[in-house]
Length: 289
Image (cartoon, rainbow, N blue to C red; front, side, top):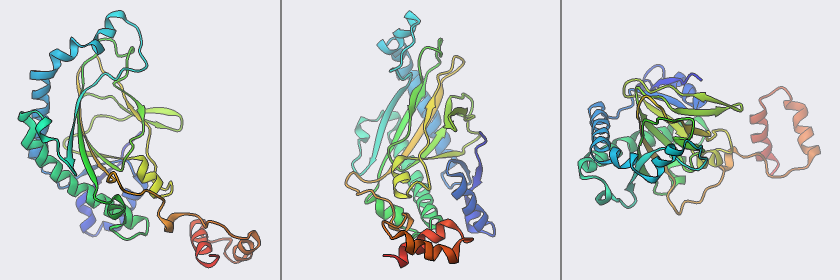
């Protein structure tokens, strides 16, 4: 599965229309020229790896989770990961974050929020909604960062790095390892490997609430992480989610007409048979209220 790579700075030039179309059709993609400071990204990566190597790696391999490999018995409910969650807003848990990372993870979150807001506006525009539709619907968005290492695993056939799932929330921006693979997407019933991210690209994925709000036009994707016997994989995933009290529902402009008499639809269809189906549904909704 080839992941499209989209240059975000082209939204501000002659290639704006083309870039909007790429973002709309790809949904999951890699972003370059995204505006997040690359020195900050490198610092974030280096500090996470340092924290893991100094404070977490030894404890992980001596944990009960790791001991399952001693028995060489497969487990369906173990995630071979070492992670922590930083909650940025609305209420920060910065005091729970390792001091080594505290200032940097805050600064990184502030930068990635700007990118998430830009993507929310672009998605809203591509859907024919007001540019601020998604951000308003999120109602004081919640932002958190899951910082994870998927440790080198001597028997990767026995466990999962992270079991298959779709993400619950909104827009997920992933800064992942540039060397060690592991991420897979489910497409047409088959698991497709997603290669490591080159350089400081940010990978975009969408959560369940975006699928609901867009009435299925944009879909959340089932994914998983496989462990690797040759190295430990880095994952820094920022979640730009609806606020806890946000009321989620499909954008009315994107839903099918709720109810109508079939003969009325046939009368309209006879004059629009060769037009675009989606446009016909939207017009039907407007005239047959």
